[in-house]
Length: 341
Image (cartoon, rainbow, N blue to C red):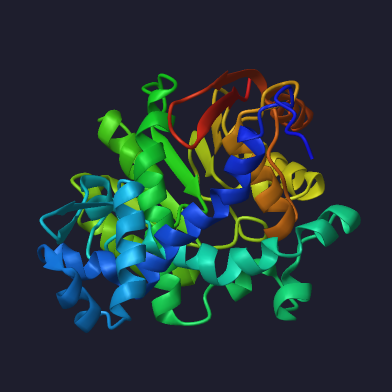
């Protein structure tokens, strides 16, 4: 058959065909502990094969692929971690993403294998993939170690985004910042560091607070942050003049979002605000890619989705808020601020 030189460039298709292989290369190296072995210093292939342990020929392919992906460096047959790898892919790093990466490998990967069914039925895949019933998030914390590593992965994710979120707007007029579902407290820590007059509260489920206490306690603003246990859907909310929702609303359908926003509105004084940290879809929903992929992730994993600024504005105004502003950031999360007049 003759080659058609006028055919469209297949680059976009070929790149996507290979994309999961690149991702899995990183995930496999994390799971095997390759980057952790190199955290204490460079190693040869022979040393790594003995320490992992792994087949030397197979490991060499993985290591050289990581060099190509700029996760490792190799010189004279000796491998070492790249700077980003040391920061985000080693389990002893305080900024690590390994918990979230391992969760993606162990849990999200299986949910995503049923994406076609999620699209057909419009529901998450927990039952299909794991035969798990009950609240979605109850399955996240099967063991203490799993819980800690997942939360630390989200903490590393938050360290990338939270400084940008709290810098998106001038929050200096607020006095008490309530971080609902605050996990390790990275968002309220960033807010208190940026605004010296601000005091904060991490409000989350009891299981999340021990690690939050550890992280907040080691921060330079620990004396200005309290920890309060509770469920924001069912328990009374702490008193404050600004409430923050970092990666919370995208987990839930409209009825639960409306319930939560209404509860926040009722608790706020006049002039109080709500700060939402989510990745915003473009108004025509053709981008950005990060938000689109996250929205599909929400389909497979939760009952929620990503939204446009106008969609958040409609939800906020329905709850009584006004003066809705949006700000895109260079980080994985954007920011939305609304006020109770």
